[in-house]
Each structure stands twice: as structure tokens, then as C-alpha cells.
Image (cartoon, rainbow, N blue to C red; front, side, top):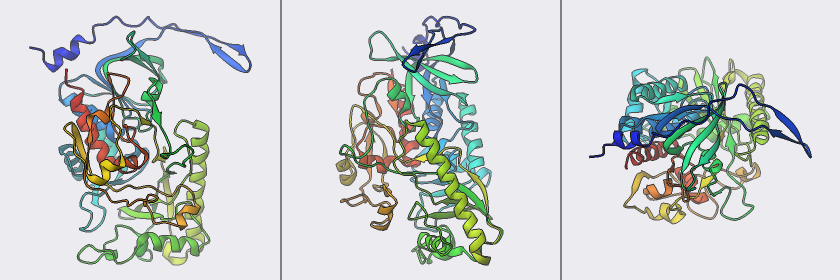
Length: 454
């Protein structure tokens, strides 16, 4: 009888790549290019399942697969696990508490007193958390499950086997140099679809028609203020902004926008948000960066620096011109990574459609259920003024709870590449719904189980 462990173990018995050379050289290749000398790469590790990307989807995939008996390696480009949760300072869980792993994460945050309700009563699956404790929770879960974690490491290439139907190894760059990693199965949890693109998978970006603009990115910040009594109506999760039945009394986003305009600031995001993370500590989400490609480091750099400057200018103006209400406001931190809402949408064996969302379709191979609306942010600063926040163009944002099938999480032209998170196979509008981190966890759990099957 073949067990999961023996199945995976038998797949690793391949010879290692050639030993590394100690040096290499590059020469001018003409026409402004540089030709790099070919070199042999060391095999840094061999495993059953290699997960690229340590964000919410990557954590869920890696932990689930490891708990199921697989030998798992998790590769993460930043210096912490958690992705947008931690390096991105998101501070808000949406669409959560729908799976056992969701509830485990919440319980672990509760152990540290680091989880809070987002709003009173009317939003029972949304929570606020403290990012530093989320880093610890992610690390604890991976360590306890036996996941091998490599931080500060980026996947930069993917190699196919002779059949062309499987990835045989990925190549990474880090302080340890250029290395190869072998695995039986690979999972793209990079959010941006980096591994799939490197492996030669087809993908889509942008809207449904050529030239359509794409969702904006945001840089989140943390701020502190010693006395918030003068700005309570600007705080999204302030209980006094809600009636006893949970209905909103004051629109905190409108109030915060009015305060910004009062001090001469017109934010790039027309529906700015501020919510309490801990007494005197607040998440500040007030920035949009428009049309930022996920595969252009120069554009991402410029957008990140511009966003950081805008955040400073906003907080500085509130301090200097806001009066006593904003006295003592101080910028504490800005995120290490900008939060992309867009992504490559890798071509899978099924493509999620907007009809799937609006009709609440179910699938025999459904991995998880999503009920989050079609959340399309304004694609330009001007558009913030002509439509409500999160409303897609020419269609209702409401959906019926729908399932996402495993087929949408398997690459169309590669047999051993899976996807979890916002880079799965889907059209533009569905991706605007399932991109939330609660759904990423559900997808990760489902894919983590699927990669265990022979």
C-alpha cells in the first residue's frame, strides 16, 4: 500500500545538480547587454512540496500539507512570514472564521491579546489584529508543522523536466547566492503569480478588455495619537459610531476625508480609512497608487516612495493644521511592501467568471466558499468622485456565496504546479472578490490537501 509519505519519498530519488562553482564572470555582449557565464548551481533542498510565497495563502498551504505528512519548504522574499498581513501592515482580516485554520489563527492571536473586532455586531467575520503578533503566529504554526522556511529569498527561475509538463526545480537568489530547489509539487502563493509566469504559464492582467485600467495599490501605515477623543467619528471601528443593532450612525470615511480637506489635503484614495489596532495605535489606509504593474520594479519603487511621501504629508498636515483634535499624532511605520490589488491571473484548468459569483455556483471539486463582494477600487483619482467605494462599473457588487474549484488552482499547461491566493485562474471581476485574505486561507487549505493526493 502506498502511503502519502512513501509516495512523496519515492519522488525525490533523483541525482543532485552539479556542485557549485566558487566564482563566475560576466562579459559585455554588445548592444548594451551583458552576457553572464553559465554556472552550475547547488541544490539547496529537496522536498515533497515547495511553496513560493509566505503570505496568507502560502502559510495555509504549507501548514496544511506538512500536517498531512508532506515534507514542505516555504520560500519568502521578505524578512517575515505573513505577506500583506505583516510586511504589508494590513491589520484587518476579512472573510475570516470560515475554516478550522481561520479559527486556529484567531485563537493564537487571542493568546497574545492581539485580535479585536472590526466593527460591532454587523461584521462578525472581520477582525483587527496586531501585525507583530501575526508574524509570531505564522512562524509558530510553520515551526510546529515542520515546514522548512527560507526568508530573504526570491524565486527567479523555474526549470521544466524533459516532458515539458512538470517543473523539476526552481532557482532562487538570496544572500546565499543562486540556488536550486527540487520538489515533487510546486505551489504559487506569491500573490502576483511570479512562479507561474517564470515557468511559462499563460496569464491575464488588467480588465476584461485590452487596455482596460487595473486596480490600484495601497501603502498602509500605522500612526499613534495619545488622545483620540476629538477624532472618534473618523475611526472606523469606534463603537460610538454604531447603534445598538450594529447599524452605522456616522460614516467614518466621509468624516476622515472631510478632516483631510479641512487641512488642505486631497488624498489619492477617495475613501480613506483609519481604524484602531490597539489603544493609541491606528492603521491608516489613505493612499492609492494607480496603474502600477506587478512585474515592473522601477514602477513599484516609484509608487512606494510616492505613497510614503503622501502618507507623511497627510499626517504632517493633520498635526500642523488640524488643531487640538489631532494633537500628538505621529507616524509610527509604513509598510515594507505596497499592497497590490491587481495580480497576474494564471491560466488554469477552469477560469472563474463573474456569473460564478453572481449566481453562487457550486462545484464538485470546490475548495472553499467566498461571499465577498466584487470590490473594484477606483482606477484613477478622478473616479473616486463619481462612484461609491468598491463598486464595480456597470454591475452590482453583491454576490451569492460561491465556491472556487480545484481546477481554477491548477495550472493549465503544467501538471505539478498549483496556485492559491489572488493569482488563481479567473476573470477580472471575480478576482476583485476572491482576492481577500480570508479566501486565500481557504484556498491554501484546499490546495494543501490536494497536493497530498497521489
